[in-house]
Amino acid sequence: MRRFGLLIFIASLLLTSCNWFTGLRHGFRYPNGSLPEDPVNLQEFNSPYNDYNSDTPIRGLSGHLIFSTDRASQGIQFDLFYSVLEIYFNRSDGTLMVQDGRHGINQSIASTFDPLKIAVQKINSSEGNEFGPHIVRQGMKLNKPLTPYYYYVALYATDLSGNLDIRFTHNLTDDVFCDPADVSFLNSSFNDAYPVFSPDTSYVYFCSDRDGSYDIYKADLNKTGRLVRALEDPTPRTITKMDNLCSEWDEKCPFIMGDVMVFASDRPEGYGGYDLYYSLLENGTWSDPVNFGSRINTLHNEFRPVLKYFYYEDFTNDFMLFSSDRPGGKGGFDLYYVGIPRFKVYEDYVNFD
Image (cartoon, rainbow, N blue to C red; front, side):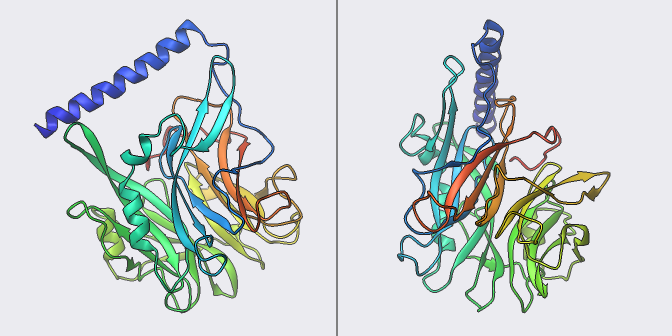
């Protein structure tokens, strides 16, 4: 019966796709959208306090938006905050809306994605700061009546021990998010934070100040089965410093989509404070970092860039979320989005679901 329900669900997705392509054949005035090349403040999500370190783990035009904020404590402590990001492009009149999906066109999406609300509640602590979530989907099942329930693994960093340590939780056992546990082979006596999986989940990239300044590292998961088993296994792994991405200054917040990595750095050749950079994976090697330039970077701080993948070439450029304390925001760090050049085609981006 479960298999029959799954077949019906897949069939409905295929019909939706067919309708979409039929619409293209009939012709829209604006078959593809273009995201703004100048950063736009996500005002609906921001507060007078600090809102940053986001992740939006679901592909497509709507999905979770989970980020760190100190709004609840009025500037004292950072917790993760759950919301829904909805992106809507009208192919008839060319209008673009980027808004809080809990109040937007597809309000039902908030209830569909409820499991991650529970994850956020599990992650937030009463004594520590929680930063830099990274969440991957690990399958789904159909509940009655044909309601999808998704499984996730959520990584993040917390300073409960005094230093930043990387931890994780998941809902793969009995559909309940487990108590967070350390990813012990990633953590050191220094600060270790902002983990992100490679697209095939064979590696974890993260940043650490174990060598003085913050640098980007790669850990081989030695994964032979389920991702959760690899994270639970305390066996030491091979951890490599990504020398060609690093400088004498700080490199933080790596994020990977396909063969593109983005991160933040305060290296002196930037425009001021932390700037955003990108690197491309070419023949198995990450290229030298390139600054995104003055349309995105400012004299102030730009931080925690995150890329979002869309289905079906919805837009001619790619979507990047980041945070900045530039003037003109609501206060502290605000969340922004911007369109960036499409460096790569993401057909081989494995880690969607």
